[in-house]
Length: 113
Image (cartoon, rainbow, N blue to C red):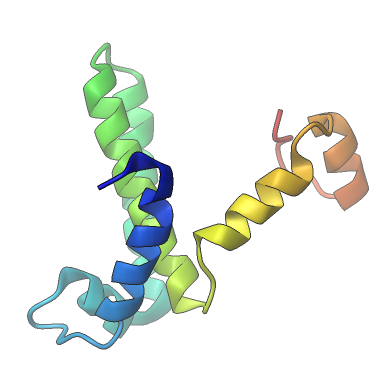
């Protein structure tokens, strides 16, 4: 599997699993639990990323970030979105100062760069 299109391949797999048996597919069980189940898992994975960041083991950090990305992609699919939507938003922001981008949104979110 090529790294260059892994997000689109994962999107396709996640889309297929929406109709799978929740008793046989972890991903389908997340979809069956709805947004509360998915966001609870994202919260758990985000905490694990923070814990791994405090360690010297880069492999562990990458593993935990992969788990977080996976679960956020499940959320996107549950909302009828995909990684391409996030990639388009990142492309839109690319080259724009994080301070300028934040001011344009008028929110208190952390700048992208």
